[in-house]
Length: 175
Length: 78
Image: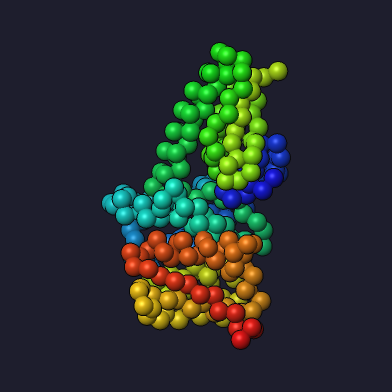
């Protein structure tokens, strides 16, 4: 499984969760790295750090000018993904261990997650009422993870099929 | 600013931050940033299948509206 683009662990491969203190340290290293970038680029923003789902969660936020941060999201979130990748490497360089931290900018991923959950809910109801499996549009690893989680929560079964970038989630009725 | 941003981004991900050097040159359009690192860190800044170099280009490119090119200079091979 090579879906570590967004560093999302496939549902079928549980990963031991690092201790919270280590995740906090990851968040702090990440915050230092990102804060200095904002300074250099003269972008207004603050860094929120926390721990979510067993990972460090770091978000760049701005009360005054959230619009200015959209450049750090980029088309289809490509800048955000690139910045997340670099931030993980920066954490790894300091801690010596691979990081799976999640980066967000101005609530972008959170909004994306809500949209995906709506897509998943609609597909789940189709599978439930018809009993037939449903194949969704191609998605990136982050998007697939959100859908897999929603499907599991609904008590159905899902797999990923195909090869990146055409990998898609298939939802089946629980057998 | 772009050269500083690139230098910062790279210094954070290598083993030898003091060896990171970015030279900005005017290009025909926009700017050319030449990145030099300790040869031991070359793999770090390029990454698997060029992934890290691509991420650096994407992030630095997002900070400007003018075209910017980033060349990773391989000192060993010159």
